[in-house]
Picture 1 (cartoon, rainbow, N blue to C red):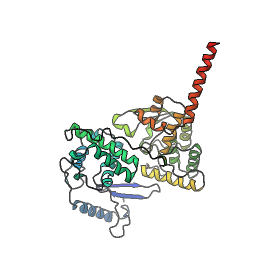
Picture 2: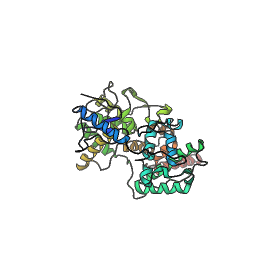
Picture 3: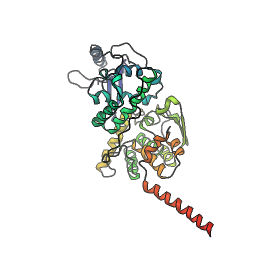
Picture 4: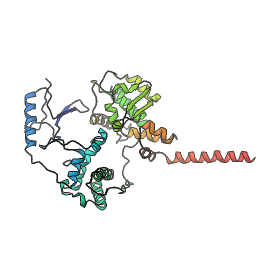
Length: 389
């Protein structure tokens, strides 16, 4: 028997095991004594009683009220108040609603008053930070503290999110200037392993063969879409089958969904071959489905890829550390090394800015680019010699 309860979120991991959480707190729904999960299909009454008890416990917690003129107050005016902590719901600002769902989710991980990187990195509640006291040097200190605890990338991302939020605050008169504007990004440490490293061709072939051997057709298609279409994880698990209009992929990236920018690309021959082999169910909810015909979650897909990588690494077929987003970097780097012009690369990768494309240029081969420059010089000088003769 299946039941639906308000405020409960459920999903299955890569092994098909169900998990349930209380949306308001993010806490797993388990037995209060044994801490074992409660299956709502087996024990619906016990599950419902536990959910109600967790809701009552959450409602009994003291409610934090943001003070005006604090960082927490600005956050709540920008992204609203969900209304799940006992307070009245407050609608998000138009500027927050204009962000894509993926961007809002990403920003939430930074600014969440209880579990966000800002709160944990600073080690203090955000209602203690007065807006008037936050200057550019303070933003630099915030960047450095978060980078020390969570890594340089997260520190730089904190500056980006703060800059966007302070720009909102400036427009609405909460601050006179944006103190995060102009704060430089931290350089990547030279000894740090590359994030989302591109996959070697041999690694991709090994992973594809490994998925084929295990009968994981959905994983095969996910790998192909990441490698040859450059799809990030969010698109791989959420795009509907209708985006596949052979031989083209016609879709709107989840990251840019608010702008409704349509990407229409011809599928490379290697991806066509994978589509022909997998033959996805065009009546399913999503283009990429698991063995049961159900959609993957982003975490579920990552779990499957990580599991396959570990097993093949133990066999010496791939190097440890492969992740699904590395396939997007594989494609971006390959297009750059092939000399594909920037505008064509942007369309293929569904980038909205030149800055996004430069990320993949950093992973390209300097030797290949230098050789192209030498060949161009040689051609020029040969023409000059012929003309002179």
